[in-house]
Each structure stands twice: as C-alpha cells, then as structure tokens.
Image (cartoon, rainbow, N blue to C red; front, side, top):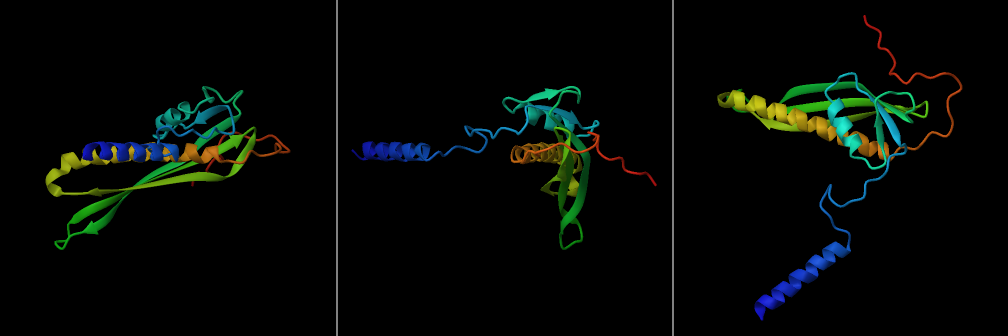
Length: 184
C-alpha cells in the first residue's frame, strides 16, 4: 500500500511538471526563428567560425550560403580576443586560479542595412592551477577555450533571434564588409 501511494504521488508530480511546460535547457524548447532565412558567414578564418557555422546550421528554416550574393544577412566576425588573468594567489605567492575571458564581436548587415551596434559576447571561465600538473592544465585550458567559443556562438545566435528588422534600406551603396581598421 505504501509503495503504491509513493508511485501514485511520483506519477502526479511528473504529470504536473510536464503540464507546466517544464523541460531541460536545450531540450524540447521551440527555437525562436531568426528574422532572415539566408545568411552568409564572413569570419575570415577566425576561431569562432566553425562554432558559429554549427550553431547557425542547427536553426530550422535557415540556409547558410557560401557567398554573400543572394544572402539576406551577412554576419561578420569583427574581432575575437582571449585573455588569461590571475584570479587568486595562495599565501606562498603562487597562482591558485586563472580567469579565462573570451570576447567576440560580430556585425550583422541585414538586407543591406547594418544593424547597430555591433554585438559583443563575453564568456568567462575560471581554471584552477597547479605547478605539478602543467601538461594536464594546458589540455584543460584548451578545452575551456573551446567551450567558451561554443558558448559565445550560441549567445550570438540567440541575440540574432531577437533583432528588430530595419524598415528601409540606406540611401547609398553599403558595404557588407566590416570597416577597415587603419594600421599605424
């Protein structure tokens, strides 16, 4: 009798969770569609390119084109930056923990109109450090950088889904490439 009551309560609890729309993050939720159906990714060989392409290709009803001609949107990776800062130091003056910060900035041109301002995704990870495990910590750091790039790509695509579509095109010819940065 006691087990039957437990199973009945467990079944009711599970039914209530599913009835309220509960789902694990990333599973079962409907993906908000992007405000364009074709996109060209101009990453210039940066490290974010493959992760961004993967996340974009997961989007339903979105075609990732190989050339900018015919694309409704052009997504350009303007910059990406990695920094490794000391987070904590022990009483002996040795490093205990690092903070890894990955920042990526992208620019979107939608139907020939640049969407302002540029989007910046910043991802931070902390990494414990020990002088005794240098090789293992280097592999861990590489994995954390890869995870940060993946997370930044997902953040960017989520933000793209909530963009407001510009109403009218610009008055003159516009370039789909990011502005050139003058070299000193």
